[in-house]
Amino acid sequence: MEKLKEKIVRVKEWAATPRAKKRIYVGLVVLLIGWVVFRFAVIGVQNRLQVYNPARAAKTDGIPVSVIEMSRTPGIILEPMTVKNNRAYVSGARAGLLRAGMKVGDGEIVSVASGIDLDTGMHVVRTHGVADGLQLAEFKATGYFIPVHALDNGAVFVVRDGAAHRVPVKVGRQDKDNAYITAGLADGDMVIVSRVADGDKVNVKK
Image 1 (cartoon, rainbow, N blue to C red):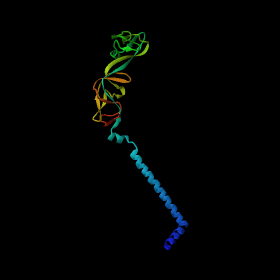
Image 2: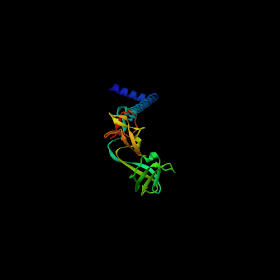
Image 3: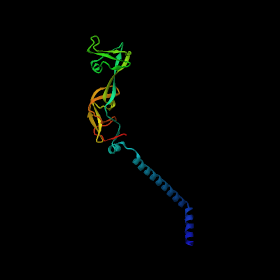
Image 4: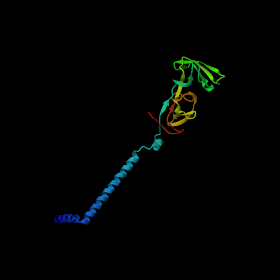
């Protein structure tokens, strides 16, 4: 017991010397630095594990995409035309998109000339009850309608076996927002409206 007390006294005396104080201080600093480095290393590992990596997720889970399930539904495509005194002048290509009976504002189209007007070189569209100015003729149909941005040079991307497949389609007509598809799609097709490439693995958003 006496020996233990002597050792304790010697340790206290040694700890009181300037040299011992310096060593204790250096040891504490080294210990503190080591703890800080360790904490930063742990945080870095945790961040690498938790940060979302789109490229890694795309390979494992597939690219998250939004889709529209196709079914034959009624829809409207709008054809712009400028009317004055219940008369509009349109090109040959535009004339083929218009027909008598189509609703235009509060009125309707009465006739679409098959031949061109010799003074203007345009086709004359006669209307009834339509105000002057830019108007929209309504083409109504039942079929497949998709957003214009889903089109990719005459094709769409459809989900098949968990991947995006490029499918050629025939566009009957379209306006600034929607396209009316007359061939290439069937009921139940999942048309992708997100940006993808052919063959990409996809994950459909619920």
